[in-house]
Image 1 (tube, rainbow, N blue to C red):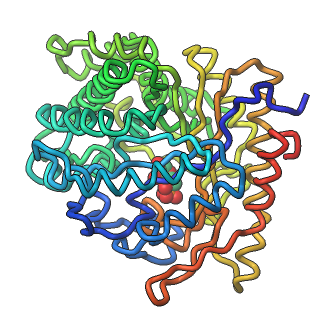
Image 2 (image 1 turned 60 degrees about the vertical axis):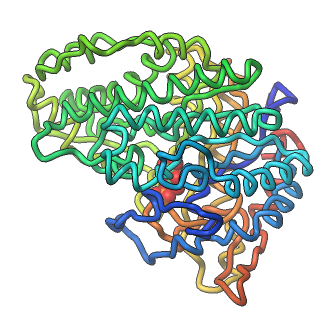
Length: 467
Ligand code: BG6
């Protein structure tokens, strides 16, 4: 009962190229929102890396892909950096050198028998679009994005079958993440609910239109929209905390599930708009509805669960808004957490998989799951990453139980990440990799497999029986 049922299960890993490549202005690449991000250090942050070097994946990707092959990867998710193909975002024609670069990457993957899974926007909007249009807050950027998608899909569709239209789209409408995820900043005169709605609608329209476009250009493609799922639980067994957790999960997860998988605004959201006096009469859901049918999987990232606590009674819309926009979720005090306070909750992961599948019925594709660990005192300690093995072991076991015992349909597990890279806060010391990346010496960053590399190799070769 411990095996993955289906032999076609896609074991592998995932990475975001802006966080790994470096080579910021090589081959005519334009700068993007991640390159230009001014970091607010995450709690526990220990260092800051250089996006121009990152993990030097730009130069060393063939070596990285060979190591992925050695682990037995069946699939590998990466992103084609938008600003490498369209340096400012408004070009009529794609940058040929950029396309050639990813030709080499994709050919290398296929040569090694690894299925490419391509993300179309992952913290890589050309900064020109962010600075001149305020990113997806402007509907014009939807057109630029779709032109880019069309160029990329037309160029690679003979070799790429799996597409993810938008990384963690459900984080885009919140002030803290909007810059990186949507290239947008809330104007001073715009309320948080109005900004939430405009970004939600424009990013969802962009993603859904991309789903429909890919289906037209490549009818047999496998297409996913993507959300991050880090459910929130009540901190105390108390009515207010339970209600606060419910509201948070509804807006962070259910709203997106309904939009992406059923093409509709749930009733609670329509009420939220009405109470905040936001009109939706011009929002056309036709593309979004069509995309719900065209989407093969719901792709998810999942790392942790959080808790929430409040003294608010949530008896009016302004208090509900406070829960949504101004209440910080915390690590669960009853569970272990990483150095950065990310709660480790493998059973919570199984619950989340169940919730999503029961509600939306789409096959799930786990395209990110991993743990950031500090370096050890010596290289030997860093390579002996037993805490990473322990984390993945527990999460994978729970996923397999969700498949075999609960009947959840999951098509693959792409762990985060095969190699060390810069975190979303540009931190190299927050290490996620199965492969250690050393410091730069003579243009090369040394790659060394960690203990988890060999462990994961076994998991894949036994199709999950040997977790
Ligand atoms: C996901 C992102 O939210 O979390 C990744 O898609 C990111 O790009 C990952 O790296 C882990 O988060 P962090 O902040 O530790 O890098």
